[in-house]
Image 1 (cartoon, rainbow, N blue to C red):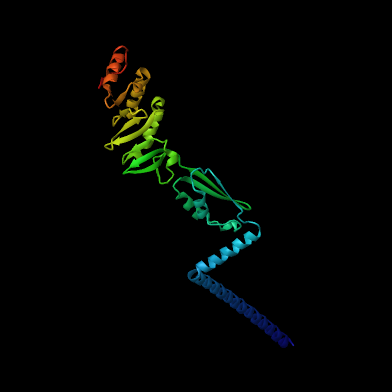
Image 2: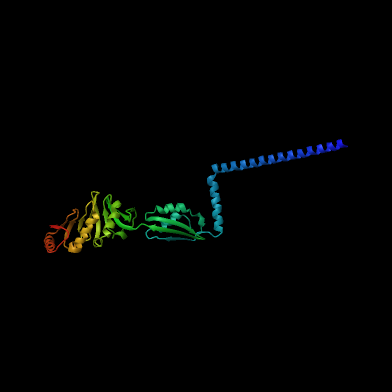
Length: 292
C-alpha cells in the first residue's frame, strides 16, 4: 500500500516536470518565431528603403495630400505682402501650385529658395494659413542709386547690392555712381551726402577716381573733388562754405576740397572776380582761393 502510494506520487511529479519542460520549449519557439518575423520585417524595410525610396515616398505623399484635400485643405488664395517691384507671375511659377490643389502640396523650402533668387527680394517668409491660404511675406531691396560701369546700368540697393532688372526708366531720378568699385563704397557715400542737406538736395552723380576717392557732381554742373581720407569732414566744409557764401550759385565750375587747409574754387572768368571781391568783403573761418 505504501509502495503504490509512493509510486503514484513519483509518477505525478514526473508528469508535472514534463509539462513544465514542454511549456518552456513552446515559449522558446514563440520567441524565436517572433524574432524571425521581426527580422523579416526589418530586412523588408531595408530593402524597401534601398530599392524603392522615391516610389514609396511619392505614394505616401500623394495619399497624404489627397486626404488633406478631402478634409478641405486646398489652396484657394495666395496673399503677398511687401511686394512693390517683384513680378507676381514669377512668384506664381515658383510656388508651382494651382488654385484648388492640396495646400500641403506647396513645398515651402523649395519655394523660399526660388523666391530668394528673385532680384528684388532681400528676405522672404512663407506660411500656410488654414484652411486655404498661402501667405508670402516679402522684404524688398530699396533702390538708392544707379551704377554705371562698362556701358551698363544697374540699380544699387541701400547696401550697395546690384539689382539686375530691366525696370530702369522709373528710376531715372536716382543719382548715378560710376566706377568699378562704386557699389562697395556707395553706402558710405550716400550716408555722407545725406548728412549735408544743402548738398543732398542738389546731388546728381558721383565718379570714383582711381578707385580711391569721389568726385561729386551737383545738378547745376558743379564738380566737388573730395579727398581720399576724411571725405565727410571735407564735404562738411563745402556745405558750410555754401551756407556762408552761396558759392553754388556763382557760376562755379569745380570746387577742390582735397586740401585740409583750404578750398580751391575754379569759376568762369567773370564769376571768379565777383566771388573774390565777395570773399574779401566778408570774414571767413575757412581759406577759399578762387581761380578762373
